[in-house]
Length: 179
Length: 180
Image (tube, rainbow over all chains, first blue to last red; front, side):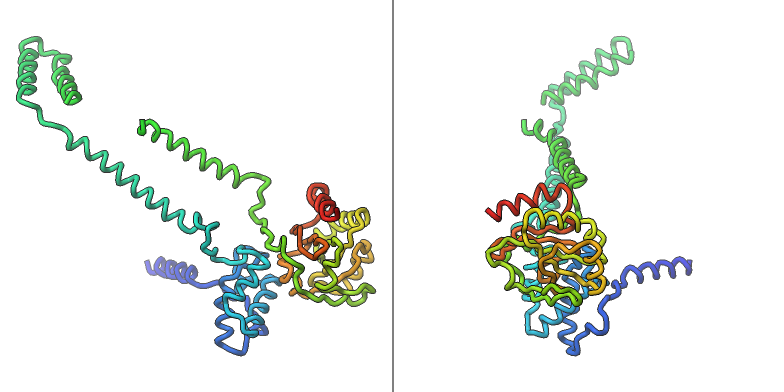
């Protein structure tokens, strides 16, 4: 048991651990605040060589070049948005790991929510329709009770065969359908 | 009536999903393909020094867009697809007469010189790029090739080697259209 807990703890710790940064010591800026901004920005920028890694965690030469470029622009006084715009102008929205919200990406951003709402509505109407026939079953009227009694009597009077017993059920169904 | 139509809904959903699968699994689609953001942009700003050991001068933004259609090709001696496209590029430049500008990307100068000596040099000018040039041009790897019109606007951008059918289907028609 202890071993199992230890193993689980390891798995959890490993999955929580962030990927190691690829930033090399000679790239780090002296200004800690700027360096933090550069690190935060780098997490948002895709390495266009490896395609599923940020430039902060990629070892590719191009990612290194981009990390240095981000820092240069920050030192030159660019805002975070200006740095991103600079890269988007050259590589398109693809360079952003978080796709921007704009008409072209509405389906991406809002599609899941719309589908969820449609699904909930679908389930709601389905359940409502299922419940209605149950409450719609009417008790037999006095006339129907009398007819049922008559039929049962006549069935008892004749031979008590299986087909005869089936009849009351059949007629009841007929009645229900008619009502 | 509405109920009957609802019965068709699963079939409709099936066709929508099947359509996506057909598109997603199509052998013509490259999921790694990176759309270019550079087409229709003006010449990027850059100034590349010559490759040490080569007689040819380097070049800068100001050298492009002087009324002449040009091709700009990123290459490196360490890049295998560059070797594959080299004879096609050489042939294309010789046949069409369109000046071919080379950008030698992250290369050792001696290696680049030896590579050009071995395979031949189809470039009218070659700039040495330590990495920043590639970012300015929105390049993600080598080889990549651009076609610029006479005003220096980028009209065509291809990631990967220029060879085979691509030349007939895309490159030559583009060159012809721009030179008219």
